[in-house]
Each structure stands twice: as structure tokens, then as C-alpha cells.
Length: 464
Image (cartoon, rainbow, N blue to C red; front, side, top):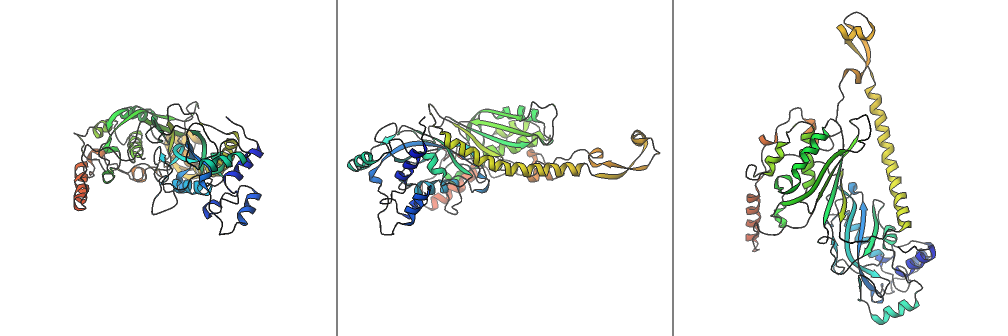
């Protein structure tokens, strides 16, 4: 790993962004990382030339990013909103003049996460502007003579510090963790060997051991059509996926005392996932953990002959879901000390804000549970308290006369916990079958003069 001094980083930033004779387009003015660059940006006239990409080669790289997706409309760009992770990412790339356009940068993403879902290790690959003349992933794309002249004049001989540059332009919830050069045939989606998701939830009144045993029924290759949202219109007509491992455990398992407020985790590892697959699996496991369903219901739902249509149930909340890791073969990530220190500073500050609120709520709950209640206690209970006569009224703590109420799971699967009576999955109304959905989609395609989809079509893009 190359360690860069402050002077080297400053010179690189000047070279890659606001060389005032080149980068004057509105998209390039956003990189105001130091006072000199701000002055240069303010002094630019509208008649000057845009950034000259012909003076640089490109480089095929992989970028690892983390983001807290709670306030964003998913990872992938959408026509209806600009508040997506990908939209902010490409805006930063454009402002830094690292790409000319999305269309010609050979972009690929490992996966796409839904609205509200976070990631610790989302990986994308693309061609970006490079300071170098040669090396792994370098693409001879510029004007050779101009590139040579720029290289000879420039005092910078190291590569552009991509995470450092992009993190200055991204929102605080989105950060580039590391980067690495990759061969030109590397594709973030198709080169990924496996993906790991984590789902965080409070222990509440669930039986973690039963959930973990039931989760093993999902391991292996199965048809998960009853544990996903069918996206037939996008061409997803095969629902067999292979889960490599599935673990449910209490995070603070070393503690001698167990509390309904302890945090638990589900760790799901697989080669690929269907749309909403993890959240549907989690919802059913939470029913089993609360003893609302028997573990055998999983066997029934995985058997397409017995259960050809998905029972109607609400999937679990997206907020606790995280794309935790993406595994690739022989990738050597470049983690820069300065970037890591800045990341820790940013995310620790955000942690403090949430942890303080959680502590305030915990104390409020404790206070409510200890509230004194005037109640009648008769017989042996009264005698045990103070030896007084039967049918006396006493002040006791609310938590001493009432078993603990576990409402922590309500935000995760609202109706599942709130209703007084649980209707078993085997007795619920059913969604439309895959066959009926496929026929409806093909009817529209026939009307539009398009080729019909068949059950042998390959699946569309991986997404959770």
C-alpha cells in the first residue's frame, strides 16, 4: 500500500480536478477540497473549455462502498427519484471528472439493495480516469501524445486516491471504503462468488435456538418462489437458489443473563438471491421463533407440489437488513489509513447520535416498568409481601405483577405481532401462481409484439 503525504494528496487533487484550464463544467466545480481549488472554481468563466479527458488513460477498478440506506430509495438509479445510492455515486464521479458518462464507463454492480437496506461491502466495477501510463487495469484510451505531455509536466506519479476524492463529494451516509485495480474482464456482478446478508433484530420473546434449527431447512438448493416477490415482468422465471449457510444467534451470547432487549443476528450466505428473498425468509422465521408457526411449515412452503402458491404474509422490515459482504477470488483491496480514519470519525459520530437515543428510550422503559401500581393482593401472595390481611391493597411495581410485554418486533413485522389471533400460513389466502403471472406478462408482450417469456429464461438482475 502506498502511503501518501499531505503534499502528494494535495497535488493529486489539483491535477485530477480543478486544473483551471480544463475542469470548468458545472459537474466539475463540486470538488472544492481546499481553498486554492475553491478560488480557482470561482474564477472560471463560462466560456472556457470542459475537462479534457483525452489527456488521461482509463483504468478498470473495483470500489468497495458502505452506506446506511435507511433514508434512501434503494441502491439502483430510478427515473422517479434522484435519492438513490447510485445516483449520488455517479454525481460524485462526474464532479470529480473521473468518468465522462455512465454509458461508456463499463459499469457493473455486485447487487442492488432495496429502499431502506444498507450495505457494508457493496462492490462496483467501472472504468475511471487514471494518472498512470501502465499497470493492472490501465486502458490506453487517451491521446497518447497529450497523455505523455501531461505525465512529463505533472509532479504526481501515483494513482488518483479514488476513495479520498469521492468521499469528499458523497453524502455522509455513503462512503467508499477501499479500491483495487482489476483486469478488464472483471465484472462486479458476475465475478462475485457469494454474497452475505445480515439481519439484526431484538431477542424479545423469540426462541433463538428453534429459529436457528429451522433456518437450516433453507440451506442448500431450493425453489424459493414462496419466499420472494416474483418479478416475472423483468424476466425472472427461475426461482432455484443455493443458500450456503444460515445462522441465527444472540449477539451477546457470552452474557450470563438474557434480556428481551438483547440484539440478535441472522447471517445468510448464498451465491445469489431473489427479490425480497431474505426479508420473506426472516418473516417466516420470526413467526417460528414466537411459536406462531411450526418449523415444518418451511418444508411445506419449499415443496412446490404441495404449496404451488405463496401464502399471504407480510415480509420483514428493510431497516435491519445489511449486505454484509461480497466475496471475490484474489482481490487485494487497498485500504488507505487516512480514509479509514475519516470513515471511523464519520460513522462513530453517527453511532453516538443513535446510541444516545437508544439509551434514553431504555431508561424511559425501565422507569415505566418500575411504576408503582395500587392493586389487590390476597391469600398467600399478600402474606408473603408483609403478612397483612387478605384482600389488602398494596403498591407494587408494574413489572412485578405483569409478565414482560415484548413489543420490540412490531416495527419488523407489524401485523404479525399486533394481532391477537394468528392465522396459520397453511390456512391463509394465496397469491397468484407463477404460471398465472407468467401468462399475464406474456399476454401484454404478445399485445406489444414482443417475444414471450418461457420458464427456461435466465433470471434477471440479482436484487434484495
